[in-house]
Structure formats: structure tokens, C-alpha cells
Image (cartoon, rainbow, N blue to C red; front, side, top):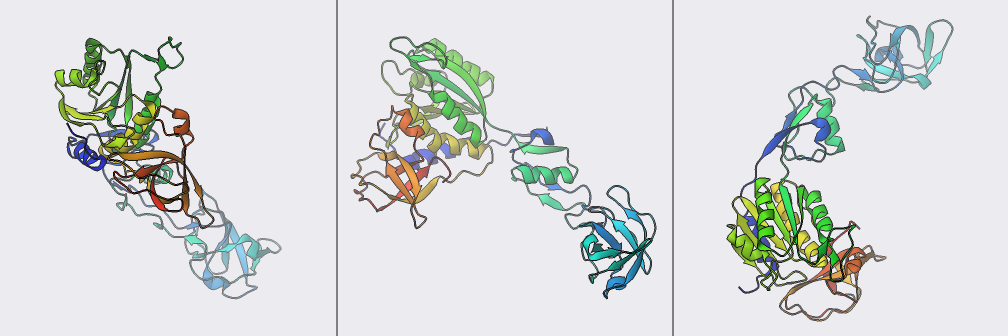
Length: 405
């Protein structure tokens, strides 16, 4: 099978993904960062009554249309304890922020704009018009008003307004379940003691983080040896858990010890494609196993992270109905870059802001895909399309951002 472009690979991956439209009902306390599956309309009016926006005195604007008018304080209105009687000509009611505006009052005289006199009398030192410092009933929303549309992410503001509308439970899109299988006799769990020819299985942590941030739940199926029976058993566990996406790390090529692809096919996977014209990450496998999408990532940690950003992140985000993070951004290269061959390159780089505010990418001198430290110190990947011309320092380039700048 010949190499296919990154663009074609992503298009085929997403077009071949089955429809994912599961929803669930969650209590609001558990719904943070989830995506609404149905619009939310207010179950009540907010505020439910005219109330004061400030501490002061509830008055009739007509009584304070001129400076120096004297008013008699006839009572008090506080939050949760409103004044029951009406406000007549020459009357005032001491009022506090959020308290109901008494009947007959139509403005609030700030406490610093009133002078206390003997007895229950005050004198205004500021003139008012009707509605001043008053929050009218329904100013925020009215009962029956659709405030949050389907597709809204329940962030801090949306959670707060949902609660204010008196919704304790909400319908949200379910998160796709991503089962991750790391393969290789050379792998040892983190915290373990590697043998003389073994390494720590590190890729699963970065790949899981990318998938989780895109909106997935993670099922870690651990490390599986280079053995067809063990790989098949892990596949069965993923299917039993009803995984929506099965991600394998390593073993997707066709070497003597690369058994994932052939074992997946034997288990019923329909292979869509593998081998992408990109660097790092050429041996990427895509297929379907029943209703589950299969994504075989390279075992090399840097390659697996780059492929997870390019393919797993948009796959999960689409299924979770979350907006895809736009990582591509224009920049200027700070170093000369040679012409590229037939594979699209992703070069690790540091990013900084120039004096004119534009991004500048400083390409790391070492780009070997085994060097995780260089990836961790990078802010972005300079994207070098296949067969692109050489660039000189100061030329424009495109960067796939790894961090917010």
C-alpha cells in the first residue's frame, strides 16, 4: 500500500467513523465541561421581582426630583425579607442590595446620597429618575426563554445560569470510550524496573491526556506482550467494554514482531489504510472493528504524540460534539530550513513573540523522534508540507501549536 497524505488520511478517518449520538442525563454537579444535547429553557423568571442594585433607600423618583427634599423612613427591605407596605408620597424605605423594591417605589437613592436627619427623616443630596439603581423583574431571563442552546459547553458561566434557571439535571452528549492497548515485549509499566533491553511505557500517558482533553473517557488496557493470543485477549476486553475507539500503541507495522495489524484483521477488523506520508509517524493504521474505530499509533513516544494530535484529537472531538481546537497558526521561522522530501514534516520548535507581536519559531537542532525531552520543551511543530521549498530565516511558515501562546 502506497503512502497517503496527512489530509487524505484525516478525511478518510473521519468520513469512515460511524455516527455517535449517545446522550445521558447528569446531575448538574457532575456535568462540568460536558456538551448540552438539548437546549435549556428557564423554569422561572430571574430576577423574580424588581429589586435594588445598591444599598440605599427605596423612593418615588417624583419625591427626589429636586435637591434637599425631606423623606420619612417607614421601614426596611432586605434580601429575603421585603417590606410589606406601600411607599406613598414623601416616604422612603431603607433597602439593601438584592432586596425587593416595595410597592409604589420606582428608584433607589444611594445611602451616600442621603443625609440622615433627626428622627426617621432623611434629605436627598442627589436627584433621581424612575428606574435608577433598580433591577427590573425578568432583566436576566424570563420563564420559558431558551437561554442555553444545544451544543453549549457547560463551563463555569453556563453551569451557573443552568442552576439559576432551576435545572438540577441536564441532557449531555456521552463521551466516547477510548480503549488504549500498549504492545511490546520491551515495555515496562511506569514505576517498574526495566530489564537490560527494556524501556518504560510512557506513550500511554500523553496519548490518554490528548484524548481526555478532546472529550473522551479512557480505558487503559495495560501493556500487552508481542503475542497474538495476548493481543487478541486485549481486543476482546476492549470490545466487551463497548469501546468506541480502540487505540493501539506500537506493532502496527509489518515487521516480524509487529503483530497488531494482522491480529486485528484476524479479529474482524476492516483495514482502511496504513502508512502515512509524514514524519514522524509513518506507520499509522486506521480501520473499523464492528462499530469501533481502530487507530494504530506508532510505538515511538514522539511519533505517537504527533499522530494523536493530528488524528485522535479530531476523531474524539467530533464524536464528543466538542469544537475542535484550532492548532495551526502562522509564524516566521527563526532558522533556515532545508527543502523537504515526499513526507510532510513536523519539526519541534520553541515559539516566542517578536516585538511586532508575530510568532517566531525556533527549530530545535535535533529532531530524532526518540527524543521526548525535546518534545516536552517545544511549544509547537513547524509543518513542512511534502516537496516544499527551502526556507530562510524570516520566511513565513505554519506551526501546529502545542501550547497556548
